[in-house]
Image (cartoon, rainbow over the protein chains, first blue to last red):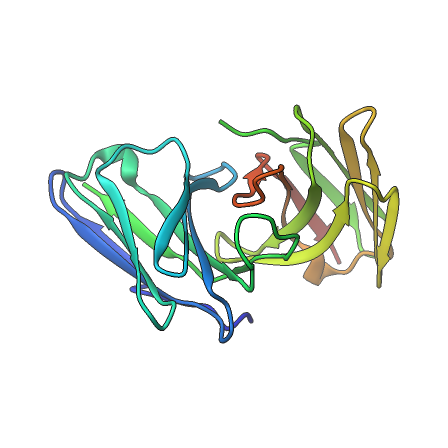
Length: 116
Length: 111
C-alpha cells in the first residue's frame, strides 16, 4: 500500500448535486494530481497541484475544481453533477520539485462516485 | 483523450507462463511507466523507463522501450495467480506534470 489515503470510499449522488472528495498525500510529497477513471478505461488527468497552486489541467470543465492545503492534502470538488461523472476518482502524490520531474506517482485507493 | 494503446486488451495464461503486454503512444515522451491495478482500485507503480533507456529490469519484470517506433513492452516472467490485474502504460512529456494512460490490458493468470 502507498501512504496516500482517500475519502470517502464510495459515494452516491443525484444529478445536479455537488460533491467533495478528499485526499491525503504521502508524507513528504508536495505534488498532488487527480484522475478520473471511467469503467473499462484508463485514468484521465484532471489537474495537478504543487505547493497549493494548480499547475496543470486536463480537458475537464470548470465545474471540476480543487484545492491543496498547506499540509499538502487536497480536495476535488465537482459541481452540477452529471451522469457521466460516475467514475473512480484517483488521487496521486509524488515528491516532485515542480513541473519537470521523473518521479513515479503514488496512487490512493480511489473514491467510487455514482451519479443517479 | 488517451495517448497509449495497449495490446492485447485481454490476456489469459497459465501460472508459470510468461505474459507480454505491448503499449504504443503517439507523441515524444520523457519517460514511460507501467502500473498495475487490482479490481478497480488504486494503481501501483511497477517500473519507469526514461526515453534514453532501451531496457530495464525489476524482479520478474522486463520493460523495453523503442522510441523510434513509439512503443514499449512489459514482460512478466513466471507468472503467478497474484499477477491477475489490469496493467496500464502511462507516458509523461516535457511538462512532466501529468500521466497519459492507455486503456490497459486485463491479465488473468490461471492456477
